[in-house]
Amino acid sequence: MSNQPTVAFDIDERFSQVQYLDVDADQAGQRIDNYLVARLKGVPRTHVYKLLRKGEVRVNKGRIRADYRLKAGDLVRLPPLKVARKAPPKQLSQGLGRVLEKAILFENDGVLVVNKPPGLAVHGGSGVDLGLIEALRQLRPEARYLELVHRLDRDTSGCIMVAKKRSFLRHLQQSLRDKSAGRGGIVKVYQALALGSWPKRLARVNAPLLKLEQNGGLERIVKVHPEGKASVTEFAVLQRYRDYTLIEARPITGRTHQIRVHAQFKQCPLAGDDKYGDDSANRALQKLGLKRHFLHASALEFVLPGDSSATRVDAPLSDDLAALLQLIEAQKLPG
Image 1 (tube, rainbow, N blue to C red):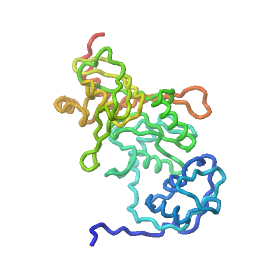
Image 2 (image 1 turned 30 degrees about the vertical axis):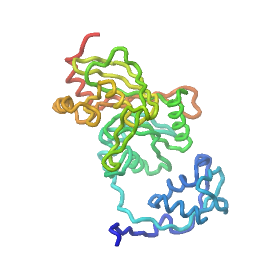
Image 3 (image 1 turned 90 degrees about the horizontal axis):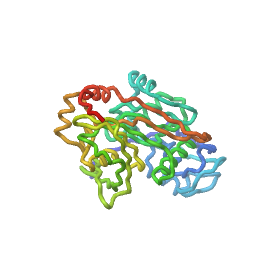
Image 4 (image 1 turned 120 degrees about the horizontal axis):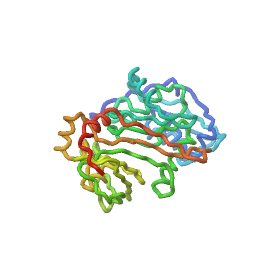
């Protein structure tokens, strides 16, 4: 007998009848399987593929494969669906709602740039009830489309982009790929506090990074390894202190934990980093009020669709990091 919990299924009011969906120009170009997964919240991906195989989902009255790419003007037929009964999502608190409203640094009809507070995951799951993207969707219930353009670690504060149109998401994610390939694209700027004295001539780290899983896949660890993916970060010194160096980091590629691991690789791990840092130094910093790694996405520079010039958005240091810098200001070194 199976020990797996029984999953209850209901007819969701949203999907209780046959639906016909018109594909607009902003939705064109995406695969039908991804289109369906994004719209059928609560329907397992495996069930989406089953519907496609059986021909229950049709486009322009015909059967299609999962890799079919939608065109503007296509008509998608959805059958009545059963979805898993789920607990209602955690509601956005008034306090967090006010924080996020004040944290919006830039907005137009296609994109939001938010100064993400530290401690807030970018999306829910894995024990996180409410992430940034879910909170923004509740904050802006009238928005038809809100999707993350990129990600930040939970404890990293600062600039993060959220697309309000799929056309902007495609454009910005292509810009990120262009940046990794050395063809311009989005410029990401971070401020970080490194332990020790950052080498004077160290302006670029080019070291491949390999991502590993631990604890049954529940934890990710990244290390420099010849079999890893090409990874490049540019660094500059902003201020030297007796025991620390405030640095600027500009990742050229976009690997997981890239800045943190490259700093560790050069024997200057980030202050407060509990995964790649120095435990003894971190304990001392905790007494000064640092409860996370000192890494802040301080600026983004990007060109939006239809624009000829770049837009730059800056995010001031969060209060906890600014307070720490004030405490160590007396340790500033000349030059």
